[in-house]
Structures are given as C-alpha cells and as structure tokens.
Length: 149
Length: 118
Image 1: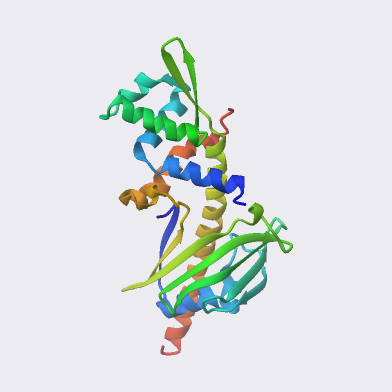
Image 2: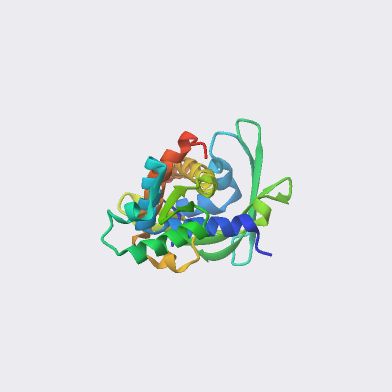
C-alpha cells in the first residue's frame, strides 16, 4: 500500500542505521535534502513519543516536521506519523501522514525500505503496488513539461 | 473536518493505481481528446468496463466528458494530477536526498566502528 517507496542499500549494520535514524546527533548529520544545517532535533523514541526536527535549506528556507512514534522495533522497524510544520504552524492544513521505515540485515549491511503510504482504498490491496510509484512517475513525467490546461 | 485537498489527493492516487486508467490518461495526454469508443479500442475489456474506469477518473476530476450528438468526447484535466505530483515530488525529493545523506553518514560510522575493532 504504497505511493512512495524508496529502497536503499547501506554498507552499515542495522544498529548503526537505526541509531542514525533515531538519535538527535544522528539526525543532525543527514536530515534534509541539501547540505543546509539541522537547527533542532528532538526525539523520544518509544511508542507515543514525539519527534521534532527543524532544518534550514541552502536557499535559506526553514522547514520543520513533527510526529509521533507509532511503532518502534529496535534496529528493525520504525513507524511515525508525520506533518510538516512551519514556525510552529502546521502546513498542508494539518494533514497527518504516516511513514514506515524497515531495516533488513543483508550481507553488505542494511537494506532500508522507506514507505510513505498514501492510499487508503481497496486499490491499496492491489498486488502491483511496488511498481506503482515508478509507473506514476513515468506517466506524470510528461506533466512536468508544464502542460497548459 | 477532513480537508478538501487531502481528499482530492486520495481520490487522485486511488484513480491512478489502476493500470487501465493510467493507460487512458497517458493516451489523453498524447492526443488531447478521444471518444469513448476510441479509448476502449486498445483494451481487452468491454465498453461498460471502460465506462466504469472513466467514471472513476471523472469523479477524481482527472477527465472531463462532453457530448455532441451520440459521441462522448473525453479530455484530460491535469490539475489534480499536478497537485498529486507536487505532493509526491516534495516527499520524493526530501526523502531520496535525505536517505542518501543518511547512507553516507551510517557508512562512515560503520567504518569508524570497524577501525575500533567493532
């Protein structure tokens, strides 16, 4: 039941990846799409605990996301709720979404599967889901050419 | 209250999850408009089934239909698609780049741990 799935292989053991995902020191090293700094990282890694991370991008804009840990399995799995906030105000009209991260031990280290489920309909049970994001991207690649309605 | 944009996104993604519907949209993107029977031609399914798919796409706001005589012409309505893409792109960009950085960081920690003899 995915709409965005990213799989990466990391040459590090799951416990190290898990630590990077969950500790403020770890998060400060990688969170954000560019080399801009993480300004604040708070985590309370237990079910019901909250996280909050604020970062600044190189273009100067600041972004913040907050959420709650819904599932925590040490070195294996994390599920969090997620919303973008900006200056304490929620964006996207306070829309909450959910993020799932699974870590699998492989010979080379860890395979991390990141999933942002979007679908809550019967369609979400369809079996071809894995290829869905890719297919959608291909289809919609055309729309990025700024087609005028 | 469930907000409108969220519902719209869910509808868009639900509509797009089906391969036949994606193929219909892709074709409309190429050809601007097509009649229902033209759209049905490439598929191994019956016309009523195609009509059902068109209903889903219409409810999601992804197409418009107009009738001239007996011919129903279908056109693409790209706005909901664009919103869905914006949503996807924002998260895709954030997470694919962040995960690259996460990988680099975790790998350096792994190297350190090995140097220390685990």
